[in-house]
Length: 264
Image (cartoon, rainbow, N blue to C red):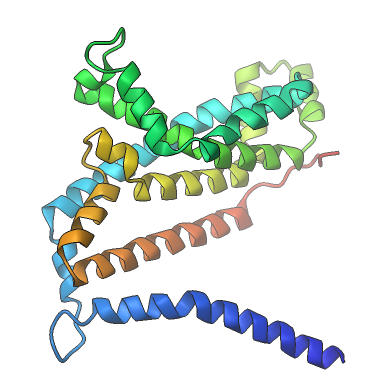
C-alpha cells in the first residue's frame, strides 16, 4: 500500500514536471529553427544584436534596481515599525499592500496620467526624469504585495523587540538598528522580494507602454507581433535570466547570516 502511494506521488510529480517542461522544450526547439533544415542560434544572435533589445533591456534593469532600492527603503522600516510599535494596525497595512492585486495596472497608470499630466499641479509627465520617476513609483506599487509579505515573513523569524532593545542598550540609533541589525537578519527575505520585483519590472507592459517609456515589456510585445522565431528566443533568454536569479537567491540564502535570536 505504501509503495503504491509512493508510485502515485511520483506519477503526479512527473505529470506536473511534463506540464511545465514540454512547452518550454517546444518553444526552445522552435527558436532554433530559424535556419531551415538545421538547428542554429540565428534567432538568438539576431535578438542580442538588436539595438532596441539592448536599449530596452538596460533601461528595464536600471528601473528594476531603482525600484528595488526604493521598495526596500519603503517596506523594511514600515514593516519593522509596525511589528515593533504598532501591531494593531498590521491588518490595515496588509490590506493596503494587497490593493495592487485588486486594482488593475491600467487603472493605476491612468490615474497617474490624469493626476500628474502637464496641466496638473505636479507635471511629472512633462519631462523624462519625471516620467521615469512616475514609472518607478508604479513598479513599486505593483511589487508592494510581494515585497511587504517577504519582509514581514522574514521579521517573523526573528525576535525584533529583543534585538532592538539589545541594540538600544548599547547606544545604537534607529538607523544603525535597521541597517546593521534588522536588515542582515532579513536579508534572504529582502532578496526574495527583490527577485519578484525584478521579474515584475522586466515583464511589465501596461505602465511602460502608456507612459511611453522604452522598457523591455513593450519591446517583447512589439517583437512578438512582427517576428516569428525571435520572440521564442527572447522568451528563452528571459526564462534563463529568471532561473539564474533564483539560483543566485538560493546561493545567497545558504550563506546568509543566521539570527542568534529566534522569533516568538
